[in-house]
Image 1 (cartoon, rainbow, N blue to C red):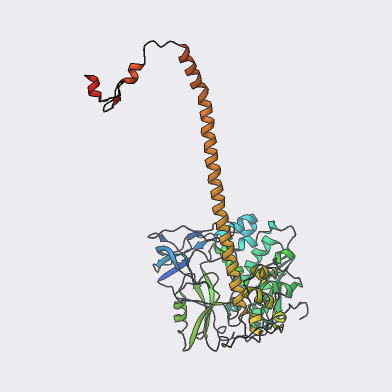
Image 2: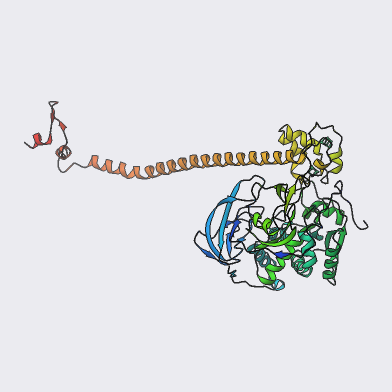
Length: 520
Ligand code: SF4
Ligand code: SF4
């Protein structure tokens, strides 16, 4: 542990890594149909650029970033767009989202690609390239990397750049395999990141249960000045704030980001995609996915985004008997999907086919006994039982006072709770309720602003009409003044009385006469 600074809490968990990390990464088969979600990242959904019936090339942009925190989406293969519509996507809510559905033509024809020498470009151009390539964090968060690579928002120079190869969740081994097989490319991507951020030091954190990956990365780092730091195998050492603490001793503020203490962190998979984007002009159209658990051939596959989960399960020998749930992500932080036809996205690092043996056994839930075990286990230094009380009582303001949104949903508290309370589910419920309330507030505010704007517009139009009338009135008044002074050249009464067709006029006697009567 020398040179390391242990974080509070955490767990020793069963690893289950060897099931899937023994084989090299293979390319998955090209699916007949790909469903590519336009939202595969944190931030605004990409604007669709393709229409149904259009032919697209592999790597062609089909979704444009919409705003600063957004990411581009590209066609993973060449073919025909058959629909742009809402489809089921992998999300805990189970709600559908907008997707571009592509029927593959099997030709894999690439769009024109252009490599660049990033050292000759202005940093903003390099960031724009990465933004256009749709690079996001592949550790699971899928935050747009171009935003994290822009140091201008931070007054202080970056002290430490961390490359995260910890991969602490049980069962997941995709990062382990890419470090073993693509270490030189990852380090090339790390050079691009270091070039943009100019940190004082670059550290690479890898859990010490991955000796092959550590050896490969040490060899690739030779002569670069980058330092590989094996960290103890303790969940959740791969979580950003915990890894920052482990490697630098710095505590990220409860409601802050590592960059607030001069540290920035990227996943090894992200560094690899940065390398591909710069060296080959390739956008992010695939990622490495671990398929493990109760399947016949657990493995790591390089998968085109948009490939249905069910095809990956089939390519891994299919489900074994007794599968109860398919989980995207690991058993601690992942979530069960409602349908295995949903597509792989940039955030899909693992598919875990879980049987009863892999899932926590269902145990009777009992009242909280205030033992404090959850407090000891919480790596985010929160008070999980307080959060639980307030979430359960729907006292969401109080839950926020206890930093609900700093909870990383690691599940350590639930894991150790002797009362078997599903604590993380309460936190997720509270967060969702707060987001929903926030959305309602925003909607109400928008409606109020629209109503106010309408009232202002009506008032403005009224004032403009009045002003026009005021401008007209003097001329009218002058005309009337003149007419009073001037003697009319001929009597006007007969003109006024001239009948129009079908007009009925009242005569002095009071009888109503038709125009024909008058003519007579
Ligand atoms: S571990 Fe469970 S029982 Fe103990 S204080 Fe926390 S919530 Fe309560
Ligand atoms: S799930 Fe949240 S409250 Fe529970 S241990 Fe993890 S960070 Fe702490």
